[in-house]
Length: 327
Ligand code: ADP
Ligand code: MG
Image 1 (cartoon, protein in one colour):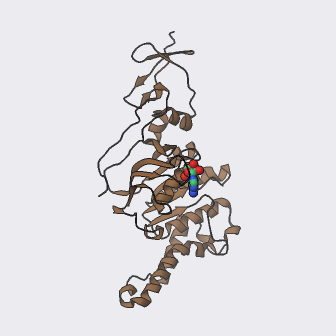
Image 2 (cartoon, rainbow, N blue to C red):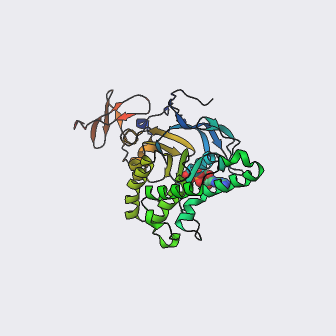
Image 3 (cartoon, rainbow, N blue to C red):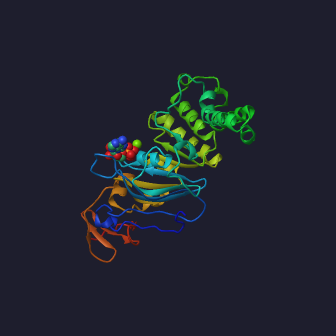
C-alpha cells in the first residue's frame, strides 16, 4: 500500500543560517492520491551524482503541481520515471493506488506534453488528437481477433472517437482547426493541440515538461492562464515542469522547488514566495537580496542597512519583519 499519512520533513537548516538545506523534503498527504512517489532515486550510469535523490510526494485528484527548478536539477528525469520511460534504482511509483513499476508507459494512464510539442507533421490536427485514442482502438481491434466475444464489448465506436476528438478540440479552443496540419498553426496553437492529444484519452495524470519554453513571451503569458483553465475545466491532475518562477506561481496549486535531485520546499505558491525555506529557494524563486546579519536580540537582526525584526517561525520558515531604524 502507498504511504497515506502526513509526513512533511522540513529542511534542517533555516534561511537565516544562510546555508542550503541538506535534507530532502518528503511530502505525502492524505486523501485520494492520484500519484504517490516514495523514496525515488535515480543515478545514470557513468555519472558520479544522483539525478534524483530520495524524492517522495503525492498529488490528489484535480491538483496542478509545478516542479520548479533550474536546468539539470532532475525535473525531466522525475517525469520520465513517473511516465515509465526510466526505471528508478530505488523507490515506488503508485498511480491511482496501483504500484506501476512493472507497467510499460502505455499502460500507466499518463499523458505527456513535451517542450517541442512532438506533433506528427504529416497528420492533421484531428489525426494527431486521434492518435492516442486510435492506438488504443487498434490494440483492442488486434486483440478482438483473438477473443472477439470478450473484446467486442470494450471496443470504442468510431463515432465516439470522433465525438471525443471534437470535445477535446473544443476544450482547448481549437474546434475549427481539425483539418489543418501542424505547420499551418502558430506555436501556441500547436502546443494546445499537443495538450488536446494528451487529454483525449482522459488520462489519470498529465505530465507537462516545460511546455511553453519554446513560445515567445506574449504567447506564453496568454497560454499560462489558458492552460490552467483547460486543466481545471477538465478536472485533470497535472504536473507542470518549469524553470520559470512566475510561470509556476501563476499556474500551480502547489509547487515543489527542486535543486540537485531533491525537493527543497513544497507548498502553496504564496508560502514558497513569502516564506522560502532555504537560501536556495529564496535565491531561485524570489531573486532575493542577501545581507549579512548579526543577531542582537531574540528576533532582532542587525545588518549594514539597519536593524530588522525577523521572527523565525520554526525550522525552515521565516517571517520577515519591519525595519526598526535602530542601529
Ligand atoms: P532538468 O529536466 O531539470 O533540466 P534532467 O532530468 O534532464 O534535468 O537531468 C538531471 C541530471 O541528469 C543532469 O545532470 C543531466 O545531465 C543528467 N542526465 C539526464 N539524462 C541523462 C542520461 N540519459 N544519461 C546521463 N545523464 C543524464
Ligand atoms: Mg528538462
